[in-house]
Amino acid sequence: MLKPLKVAQSPVNKFREYLASRAKPQRYTESQRRLVEFIFSAHDHFDADQLCQDLDKAGITISRATVYRTLAKLVDAGMLRQIHLGTRVVYEHEYGYPEHAHLHCSQCGKMIEFQRPELENIVQEICQQHRFAMNSFNLLIHGTCFECNAKRTTQRRLDLV
Ligand SMILES: [Zn+2]
Ligand SMILES: [Zn+2]
Image (tube, rainbow, N blue to C red; front, side, top):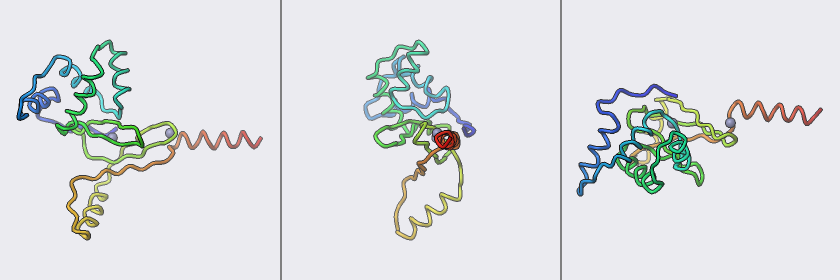
């Protein structure tokens, strides 16, 4: 996990600003406010189902429809980022969290975060060569984490005995 950035506004207030700035300003419901607070209480990579389960566990009752609608709005507001893992979509904080790339373990699903600013320089150079205007770039490396690899090696050794 990386160090969160200092932000001028709390996520709850940032989202309020977003709703108010819409062409047709939207009401900020109590459920939405609690949801934003909950999502931004800890940095994680989560999907909508997991979020619903975590809310249940925390004893917070918010309808699935509200969860899905709010997630879409948080992405639109630039506060959450979507990461596509095959058919699964996971979310993580964009607001108040530094740029980073991911290693994704296909065995246990773990996401390892890392920062290498020189990667951005390489990507920008490639874009320049192709006269390509970059909006954003996300690096996602798929493979197997150290723990899962160690387990596999042990298993293989046991199979040989
Ligand atoms: Zn793993
Ligand atoms: Zn991340």
